[in-house]
Length: 177
Image (cartoon, rainbow, N blue to C red):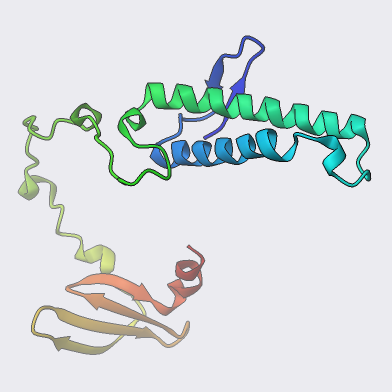
């Protein structure tokens, strides 16, 4: 999520409004910024004078403005979402009361799909491997296990019940995900 605060102090979401984790993040940032403004950036003389007074003042004004922006976004996010029913971070109970209106009605009747008409499960032709040599087929207690190998590409594929699970040439892509 992301947000902007206009000159009129109105919050607008750049993408989607924050969900539960986003609200928790905003609470954490607000807490950190509040500590910085209220406790750390109080007295310029408490710091080494490597920072000029003008710089210290600019840093403090920035932190105050940032705290105000995050606080406005947090207030709006809580008011708009189910997170209003959730305790603030650090609360003893880590539960939320979420409205059931948030979810689609699963009791609504939908039109059934005629599986015979569409041949949804009849896709073995997609799983055939031309130029692959059958290596082995075993029947476990629960399913059929089959392996095929292509000598030219040195690729081996593993199938469970006529559905490809993995091939060795998928490995680089699989591990990148």
